Image 1 (cartoon, rainbow, N blue to C red):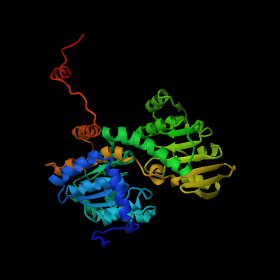
Image 2: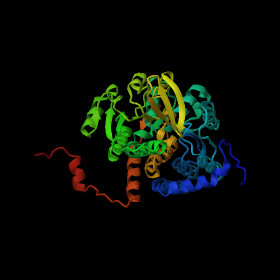
Image 3: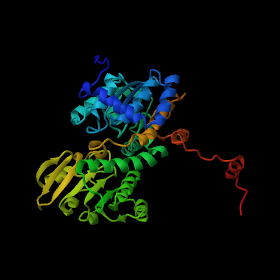
Image 4: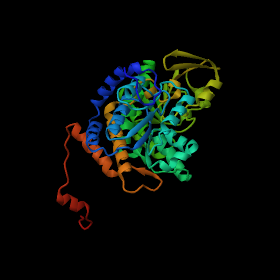
Length: 423
């Protein structure tokens, strides 16, 4: 294999051929990104644009990178989570596709941030982020680069929340498009993608039977809805905990039991956090749990479970199988933490299926094009995805599925735009 001419830090370039086969396999389920890639290759709307990306380095992300590259972008990619990198994919992007990647599965925090700095070294004009670590590092430690940044995109709920906090504080220095808020992202990726991949990760880590289990879902946003729906489909008895009254009411009417986490703690067999907040499951909850309870997180950061508190109240800790740590509490009960409390769907499984990431990454690609080709820079703020992009992604996805829908007649359009007609 010819030595790559791009900068990189990956586990093993010898993995490249296997990684490329998996990238091709994912592409089969990503028809929208493929269509965008074909158009980008012809039109080159991103020619010479420097794009720094901090995303989960997976087969689906690889197909997004190839679309942006074919559109003319100069790319640099690092991981948005230390445990989500697929090392063979990282190798393939470097060795076969000539894209700079700085990402190794299982990297320590120091290496994780060194890799973020490495992709920032290319002086980005556009940033792509998943969780806002790249943006936060840029604002805190690389402010000399801010002047050259045109705009950015953010993939996930946690990142959009952080960015809105930055905007409110007056700390945000350039406009960012919250891809997570697109209907073709959160209604599908968050619900169907997270729902399936979270249960897949827990199943792979534990080989547990879901039927008959009491599954406690902490948070009933779109991710929580998806997990609850899939768990119920496998025969689990789903308990939802919430702090938002409307979501709690919705969970109750969807057929879930709704209660406080203090009430759920002694009942649950499997606990899954999807809130984006800190210490959702805390020491007093651990203390109340039954022997053998399983703990998993599918929120972006590993802060939703108070892991430090769990270690403080445990007599022993041992790795009992891959991705499973057993904590024996002072009272003798054993609790099982999965994937170090990190995103279980990417730690123990492969993340979302390619067909749902097709829509999410189509939004990313089209938003990058929109931001890069605007005649004027947007004012600093966090923006929703333009409606025309959201609708175009939905139209392309429907077409790829062989689905046709009706169109409004002129009479119907006129009726909807008028107010005179009544009873």
